[in-house]
Every structure is written in structure tokens, then in C-alpha cells.
Image (cartoon, chains in turn orange, red):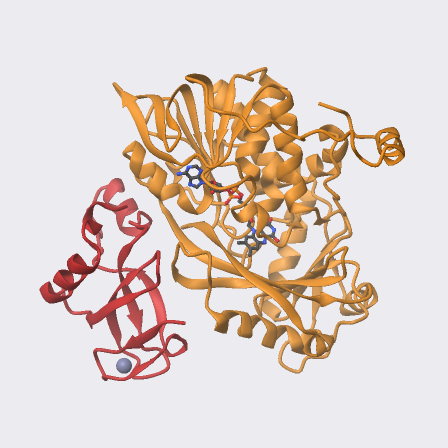
Length: 414
Length: 107
Ligand SMILES: Cc1cc2nc3c(=O)[nH]c(=O)nc-3n(C[C@H](O)[C@H](O)[C@H](O)COP(=O)(O)OP(=O)(O)OC[C@H]3O[C@@H](n4cnc5c(N)ncnc54)[C@H](O)[C@@H]3O)c2cc1C
Ligand SMILES: [Zn+2]
């Protein structure tokens, strides 16, 4: 792998950029691997990366039915924050946020992490109380957040209308080190680093069956043939129930569509991320100048990566009161992803009833921010059989009634 | 945008009049049931790629509940039927069999 650096850029500039090589190998599957990861989204790739980096397990394949990062990882609005309420969530999301801080250096790939700050607006009395409680919890967890006044909100976001009338801004939960990153770059950077460690990233390779012998996994059937493995990580977001079914167990997951849209590019007007959870809308400005807008999920099970137009309308209608300038913007593109939602809105990082099979899913509407932390923890779980970061997230919590209820922090979880 | 017919009041309207409420025909376990049964009732869902039977309410209309058969891969609505039943009607199942042979094996 050629290292990217300012010298490499200068050298290539001198020779008309003819010296760049492929960032990762397009591999064909081998007969067997120590570990196979299904799904080359951010979570799958990060899992593989940390299996290699932290545990020296590099005989690994990452199988992807479509293209690298073509699932939710390439469709999300890239908000990164760690201001959750419950201790297990704070631990894994804050681990993740802190890994984002050094990811570009670590991967030698610019993921454009921009810790520009995230405000979650409090627009009802209930939210004021909820976010104050979260700020207090965060203080105990060592996550730096702060409840700020409407005046401070207005100072941070001059284009905002704080007077209502329907949804006045009563304050906000401010995380100064939250922000955004470039979603594709996260997937590409991990793929490049995995490939460099000798792992095989195999695209257009759909897993169609999971082979077991005596309650233990032995391999997978794919559209590119059978591949053997000792350990298997299922990291397929909205398709988790489908894959679990192949392995013979059930998941407490439902798959629904979540949509986002972007406007035409305009001059810089908002340099923080704003989330308005009461009205199910959130917005940030991309480096190209587009306003990136997301809303809530559609109400029913869906695998089509399309949502209903009226949900877009709802989101925009609500945002217009808080951001009147949005009403003058033309929208350019709109799309959807299939998100995997659990009963308590928290993820599942877990062993399964099949020996050697591990599952990482349920990140729902808010897992981009969790990619490095989740990969870190999942790799430990797969390598050692347990991880302090995943202990609370086992799927047995639904039988035991031991939920990680994030309904306050994750009313709209992005 | 789904077009839905309410079997209670007979109105056909687009989906904004209605609200989806998840999988239908779930066995409601209660006091005295095992942990596994409670988990199944509360959290385990079929979540199929394909034909899905679900509960809906005519929220901005007659207000009543009903059931719907829908394809989660194409969003085609096969039909709606009364909520006062344990199983989908036979003629609806026959129609789905004709349109989606083998759908019962799909998860
Ligand atoms: C519109 C939208 C906005 C969002 N906004 C945010 C946000 O602002 N902040 C945030 O933190 N999160 C956000 N999210 C959530 C976030 O995108 C996801 O939680 C995260 O990307 C999930 O990553 P993943 O790697 O688990 O899944 P994915 O990226 O979906 O990867 C799973 C991969 O598995 C592959 N796969 C599936 N089945 C098979 C099979 N049988 N064989 C082989 N491969 C298979 C898929 O093709 C896919 O590439 C948003 C999501 C959406 C849809
Ligand atoms: Zn009706």
C-alpha cells in the first residue's frame, strides 16, 4: 500500500497523477478463512480492521452482496455524537467518538472528521427536563456535554428562529466535540487498511446460507461458492433477521426505511449540526454547501430502500418554522436506507445460539457515529468471546427484560 | 405512497389517512407465561423480505383497526381484512399464492 502524504500529492502532481494505485485489492474468495464478516458496511469493515489491528487475526474475508459501503453507511447524514443517557451506550458511543478524532491518522486516509459541535434542540418542557437529565448523566460518564440557553443557541446558529410559535427553542443539549465525517471515506479507509493487512474484501458476493455442524458454524454459501470459516460475524444492518434465519435463530429486529435529502449548494450559513427531535428533523451543511436534512423513519416494515414522500414533506414542513430560510431552498436529491430497529432502540452485539457466530446489528437510525467503537468492541467479542463494551448489549437482554432504554436520548437517533 | 382500502368503512385513500402498527396475528402472552414466551410476544418479529401481515388503523378516518397483507420488497398491498380474526382469509392467501409462489418459505 502506498502511503498518502503531502509528499505523495506533490510527487503525483509532478507526473500528472499517473502513479496512484488501487486503494484495495478486488479479491476472489479463498477456500477458508479464520473469520468471515458478512456485510462491508462501516461496522463490518471496522470489525475486520480491529480483528487484525488489535488481535493479529488477518486471515479474514469481508463479504458484501452489493458494493462497499452501499448500504446505510453510504446513505446516512453522518452525525457523530455520544450524548446518550445510559452508561453502556455512553461507553461505546464515546469510545467511538474518540476513535473518530484520530481515525484519519490511524488509517492514513482522510475521513474528514469535523468536530463542529452538535446541538439537540429542546422545544418542549419535556425535552428541557430530558436533556438536562442527559447532561447530568453525561457528566458522571465523563462525556462532555452542556445544557445551553436559547440565547447561546441563537449565537451558535444565527439562521435559527427561536421564537416559535409552535416550537419555540427553550434551550439545547450541546456537545462541542460532536460533528460529522465523510461516510464513504470511512468505508474506503477501513477497506484499504484491511486489504493492506492481507484481508480479502469481496464485493458482489451475497451470502445465501450458513453451514453448521453440531451446533457450530463451518462456513457460508455465497453467490461466489462455498467458503469455510471458524468464526462468522453477521454485520448486515436491515438484513439481520434474514441472515439469522439462515443460521436458525430469531432476532428482535424490524427493518424500516429512513430517508434523507439534500438541498442545492449555498454559501456557508451554519457551521454546527442541529437536531430538532420534537419535529423529527435535523440539519447540517456539507463541505459542498448542500444542506443535509434527515427526518424520522417510515412507519412500516420495508426492504425497498425507498420511503414515502409525505415523510419528507413532514420533516421539511417542521424544519421551516425553525429555519425559515429552508423554504427558499431547492432540494436536489432524496433517498432511503433500510435501518434495523430493536425493541429498546439500542444495538445488539452478541454471541448467538450457534457456536462461532456473532451478530452486530440494531444500530437503527444512528449507527454511523458508532462505527469505530462498534468495530473495536465486536472484534474483541469475536476474538476473546467477550468484551466489556458489549456485555450489556447481548441479545439475551430481551428475555431477561434488561433493556438499554434510550428513548430520551434517541427519540430521533442519528 | 400506498393506496389502502379500509375494510371497516369502505373508504379507499392514500396512506397518510392510516397508521401502521406492526406485525399481525401475534399471540399475546400474559401473566404465567415463560420468559421466552414473553420475549416472543414483545420483541420477536418475523420481519420477512416479502409477504407481511400487519395491523393498521384508519387513524384519520373511521378510527378502527384492520389487518393488511403487503409485500415488503415491492410495497404491493395484496388486500385488507378484518382485525377480528386469528388467520388471514383463505381467498386472500390464495391470491398471494398465485402472485408469489413459494412465499411461505421466505423469511
Ligand atoms: C437516511 C439515513 C440517515 C442516517 N443518519 C445517521 C446519522 O446522521 N448518524 C448516525 O450515526 N447514523 C445515521 N444513520 C444510521 C447509519 O447509517 C447506520 O446505523 C450504519 O451505517 C449501519 O452500518 P452497518 O455497517 O451496520 O450497515 P450497512 O452500511 O447497511 O452495511 C450492511 C451491509 O451488509 C450487506 N449485506 C446484507 N445482506 C447481505 C448478504 N446476504 N450477503 C452479503 N452482504 C450482505 C449490505 O449490502 C450492506 O452493504 C442513518 C441511516 C439512514 C438510512
Ligand atoms: Zn375506515
